[in-house]
Image 1 (cartoon, helix red, strand yellow):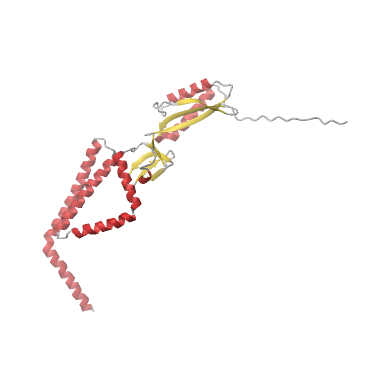
Image 2: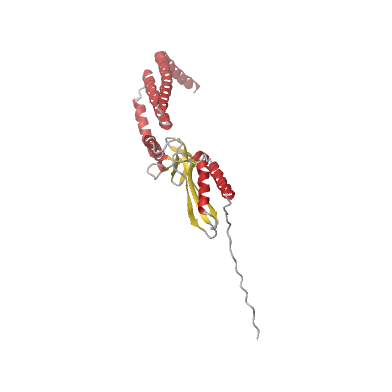
Length: 279
């Protein structure tokens, strides 16, 4: 038993030694070709990225094209290196094709996300920095990947949306701004024109409020004990909460300084009494 194992080991050793002696130069050449291919792929990918960035092309498309260039170049040099040491790539291509078919059926959802990602990169309905609303979620676009898009909402929470849920859906894009609505009630005896003027001045002088589209202020409705003044404006999404709180405080203080009454809910209760009559 031991002699058979020794004989088998010697057989494999002779095969390896013969292969190394026969293909040593080819093996060295293949390694050098592969090293050169990796260097060239990195160089070409970097050059592609630099050229596209210089022409202000979208960063997501730039990264995708640079990675594709790198993968293509590395694949080409791997094929050349395998051929140099006498390994035919034809069986590998067939095996890869069969494996791809099975993998494609297994990861159909993932592939649909990648296909949708390519469509987003090609059509660019939004870019990094835009504020979008889709499928009931909204936020500022942080990054656009092949499989998913990452949003950040006003609470600084990251939301990952699969790209297949973006393509073909109704998409709201407010670019890098978000819409804010607010209300404040004033007494019926107070001047609505004065209150509107105060709010308009505050919104027009606040650096966090966009001038285009212009803010809107007016009477929203008539409550039981107050006239409801509504105001709408646009503010950068990245500082949405901060600007909203600052504007609300400024409006509240401005209404008070103008001595415009802010009423509170009131309820009038009438008690009726009847005197008892005796014969």
